[in-house]
Length: 173
Image (cartoon, rainbow, N blue to C red):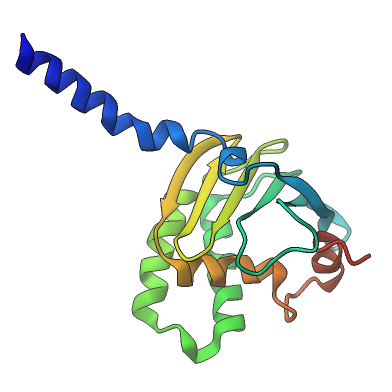
């Protein structure tokens, strides 16, 4: 009986990390909206973006969440491909092909095919990596701080493609 109880307890303890991160707001306690905007492509509304953090302006080494609510159907592969292209553009030679392949595999696990109304929220965890939630359900965690910084740079780097969206997210209207 004792060994059976120990197995049950061990199994329940394995669930604790998953349950602890079941909602992105638990990773960014007391999150408040820093800024919001939308991405349009040739006039078509692609997604609404909202940046959440404990404080504004955004602090470089503080946890934050970037929430994207989609208005179009986008395949996982398109999301991964576009993200990798932007990471390469912003990182240049600093990221080698082996690392890009590793990051592609991480993104394949983190993202899903989205339809209008679905949300993907990425949570930046300084010095640790990031977590991705699909409609508030934990989808994947990436334990790679370099990936997290490169990924969120797509929206927040001063060289971001959409400067208006970047300013809006950072509350710099």
